[in-house]
Image (cartoon, rainbow, N blue to C red; front, side):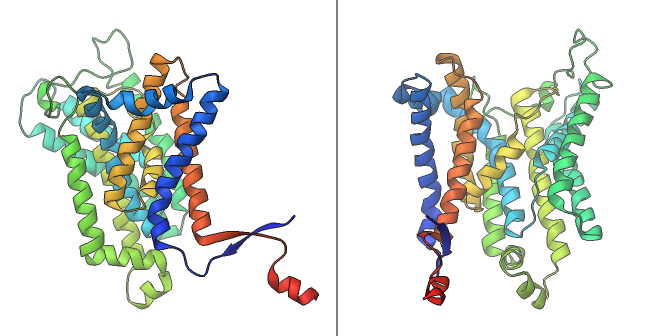
Length: 361
């Protein structure tokens, strides 16, 4: 029997925002089936994965720490995606931003100054922007695919990180471990809740969410981004400069990723290590789409994806499940989200197209 997709006359505006919830529910149901097949109590596994990690104040604080880079990067990426500018290299921009800010902390090691942390944050933003400027220049100058250039630069950034922590920035007193000195207290972000890792980086993430909402809903640049994304020819006719928007969106997304990187270093980690991020730059792509490319939606999506990281760690410790279950959850969530998006725009039909059937008669 022939199965085909037939485009709907008009997509449902309600389902556009309901589909992420449907994707979450389907992910949980599928995960329960998966846990049952592995011989694990599904209800206990879901409780361990989604409830236990946030059952204490320390758990909630850790959730916000994990969500901070996801929200920051997700907001930046969502702006570019709305303009059909596909920055896939946020992971590399995070690393370079972290190195820019962390390098400043090492340069002023042992010196106490209230200006050091703000300067590190600014350097992180500049570092991320500089790394994102490379695919922006190649896109506008040579029409190079920004997906490939930004993605390939990620691996270059990781190699730069590896070189520095194994070479000139390695702690001379670290017994040959590939890591930098521990940052001085003046290079660490202030803690919001005592005896937790929650720092002011979370407040910066909320501030970026507000700025992203204002930009997209109240500023002419946000309007131009939407028009160029939905109808490039109409935007060109209106005089909107596509190359200018490519630069703006890539620099913003790179700056947000760089800021996330330096917040990770000066907040959660406290030194430069070979693995700064567990893949936040790639996970933030899911966050952006799960949040429907809206800054407020990205905020809630970032919290959900951060919970998958905590849940994976909790399931590994208490139920002896592999940590790869985190990636499985994230992959299933993306799969069901994309499937829901397809069904919003198309309906499933059985049999040959009507036009062909009528012609045969």
